Length: 213
Image (cartoon, rainbow, N blue to C red; front, side):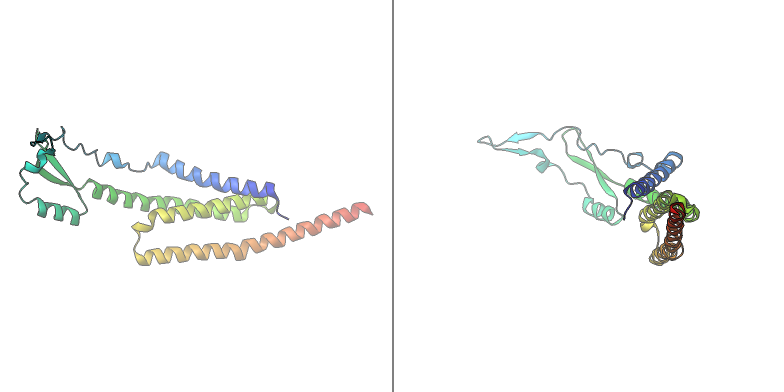
């Protein structure tokens, strides 16, 4: 029969451990912020003027603005380089110039490096928690299981964060190793837990029988 208290304790330890790892790393190794690389794009400083035709039908003067020379090529090149095209406006709201802002590319580059470092930091912590959970005494089974699940979850989160930072072969190898770790835990420790718990139950039954004699 499932012991709800032990189950709740295991889940609680696993979740809190994973959150503790995440926020502790964020304290000592903060995640880069998008706002630190890309500032808000202001757009036109004033609304476009409106000229009225006969009959009161309005249209925007942006239709009469002079097209920026070479804007098509600049826009295409900027798009190919994954940049953001930002326009400069005159006092009437007309586009008079444009630049390709590469801040998002720099941000993505920094984030890939950060996620990779996050994996290098979190993965050993997760593995240490798994190993600690494996060797804790059976008498505190729920706590040991909590550390194991917390370590597995931390390892999973770090892998997801750094997935884009790895090549195809690296992804396959890392996932294969993580799968081997989980299977090894299942074979070595979960079976040992079951055997140990059966022995404990047998010992308790024997003690009860001896008391009745």
